[in-house]
Amino acid sequence: MSWWTRPPPVDERRWVVLDVETSGLDPRRDRLLAIAAIALHVDWPARRLSVLPGDSFEVVLRQDVASTHDNILHGIGAQRQRDGMEPAAALQAFAAYAGASPLLAFHAAFDQTLIGRFAQAHLGRELSNPWVDIEHLCAVTHEGVRARSLDEWMAHFGITCAVRHQAAADTLAECELLQRVWPRVAKQCRDWRSVQKLAAQ
Image (cartoon, rainbow, N blue to C red):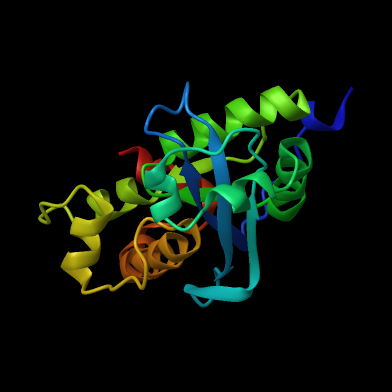
């Protein structure tokens, strides 16, 4: 049996928050341009969640044809796109970085679909890591807050982002958002499975 059909146990103490840069807003058609990720350490006995800036990842995928002006405005210029890493190598590098850690993203279905599609195309498989949507954790722990977008949640908590709509900067903002809702998550959850159940509510 191949190793990816029997995924290793989830590393509950290391979470990976990620964000992607794409050529558009359709995860089933548009291209994956970049992935940025930052790890967090979960100390379950102490109920503490810590961002690990030194445990981070960022890659630009090589594009045969550079995407639109909008992506260039977001910091991924045409030359940077053409000079990026080969997609198969980029996806393999991300898979190695993620390891057995759960993956978290804001509106995670978009990132999961896009990364899954490109992993399937270039690696012949999707990643086996479990996913949780940060927005779901925000909503279920702060039911009275009328926010949906990342900008709205950031505004609610007074979080600032140096450069919005760049994967690395957005990932750091999402880590900070996760830390803000963590106290309420920690009160209800004792392991990763219970975090998944909470988000599913």
